[in-house]
Image 1 (cartoon, rainbow, N blue to C red):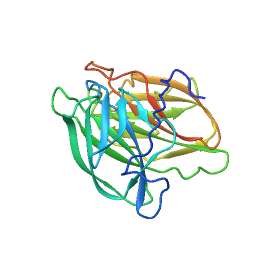
Image 2: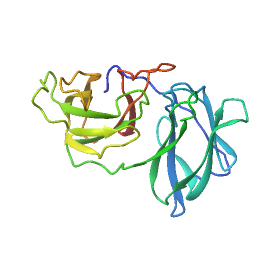
Image 3: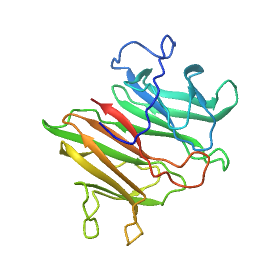
Image 4: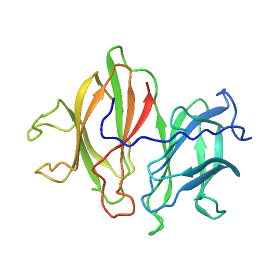
Length: 234
């Protein structure tokens, strides 16, 4: 189990015309994260149909699994809950038989808020292993971060990062490692002293896939020292 992590609420959504019960060759799957630190709770519509309601900062919908959406170019709108005014109105392309995470990211206050789509890979890791990736989505964090996936209490002074120079809005490749307890450390790529911005111990069990997301502190101009953890598989 992960420790020191935010528990994400489950939003049960069903019965919308744009979504189907299965994922055929003409469908994709998507989950939605509100990662905008100064946005209010969000409702999300796809091709005019509301599919997510009242999604708070750091919230994920659905908390487990995915919504199913028709493949192709879809109009995606984020709006403050209970209103009809869009803060994001974008055309997003979904390929058939793919899985995605869709972020509302950036800030309302400086008009940088936008949709950010990332392709997920939930194919199982090799037996006895785990997979994880990191998405850098803290607008007031460093332009690039280094990520260390190391044994607990490791001195990283002379250790090369597991993920090097991860840019804002970028997702790393998936990392595969043996199931174990790890320390996940995030530093500014330009900081030669390797000051730890984020430092979390994680227990990772065989077969688990995790996405770790850097975020801002809500309503603040600084990067959080806590990672948002998405439980992709198991």
